Length: 179
Image 1 (cartoon, rainbow, N blue to C red):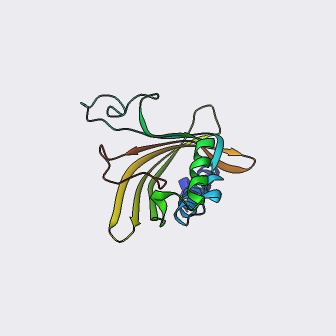
Image 2 (image 1 turned 90 degrees about the vertical axis):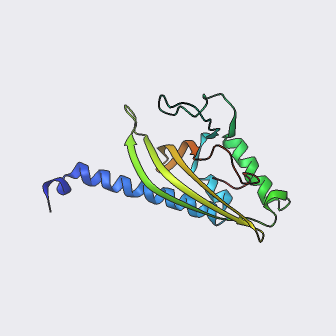
Image 3 (image 1 turned 135 degrees about the vertical axis):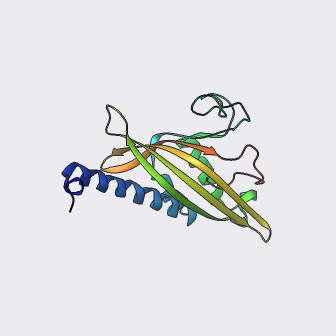
């Protein structure tokens, strides 16, 4: 074993990385298997779940094609609103989800950075979401995600999720499924 692999701090980091990766995989499995109430448990009460609109702009700055924090967005939900979305789908009369979509989230390229002066973590990942509905409806969404995750009561919780869609214009008929 090399010196860098035997470093206790490195081993702790590797364990945390694996824990966060598994957490994100479990979260994707919950939403893909339509266990929406369980899926909500991955989020903190002070959640902001934000999918900003993309603009075609000249490139300057970190996200030159994303509006400001208060600009229009595809989705800008807190925990209460996310619960209402889930409750609406679970009624069985949600017109855009009857019959239900078949959805698969692929989560990849997970990178974890500690948030300075905090025990929280900034987690970056890429996602591919495939949705199929009815006989002919099929959507593919590609995005980058930025999550802020903290440990609360011994459990990891997402308290900020920003999803940067790779699409300026969505061809999906709706975003009734969770990205």
